[in-house]
Image (cartoon, rainbow, N blue to C red; front, side, top):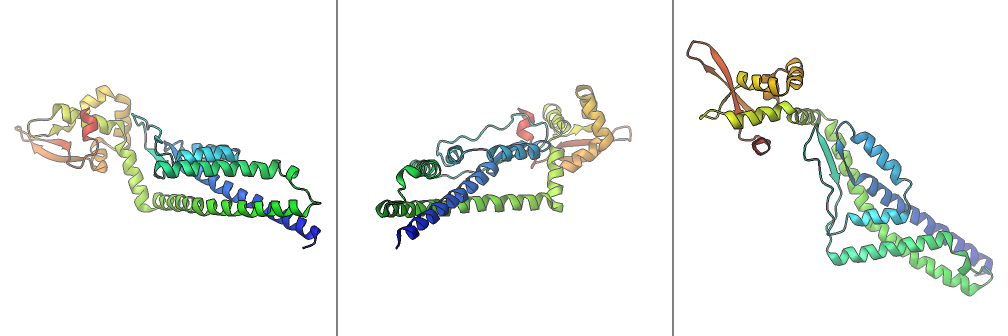
Length: 277
């Protein structure tokens, strides 16, 4: 091959590898930006947009560091709020390899970061366009590098694709009729009045397990007057309790011929332990 053609082939392979590094970096950005996010329903969209914007500015070295956090066997998920004031969402991508795989992957990715930086910033000193030997050596080096990048892309791309597909399924669900129903139910269950109702019946229930709803309403009105007024205006206490599916409700006849409404936590109540603690 004439020297000029050999030089052009080296240029082509340099460009190929630069593009492959950009592909790898784009997958890392997607995983880091979308693999882990948490927040309250009212803020999560803004937090996600801010997080994505921040990730776009990260160097490849920083992206690799964030990515390997998610394959670290000793990785600890950030703590969730102990007290929830509204529905809270948390998405956290994790791979669970053994220590040997983690150390190998960490080393491989660190080497690729160094090679990428060398290719982009420090290639010229070792590239002598007037030497066929120099061109041949660099060409072989670029081919080996190409295989390494392609191999890493082949392992990371399925991870990014899985995250993308999972997020789409979640979005489709939340935009569906059933999703909206479940989201609304989650919102109702997180209401502070619901926790008060649960707490009251575990503290003051009768021997048969039932609690007077009017008596509970009087206690709530004293302990949380603003929240009680809002619930009474928007739902009504009984409607709220029925909507959550957490309570059993019945009507009991009184001695003077009247009736009273009673309630108790049902067997499937998910806040039973929280209200008792």
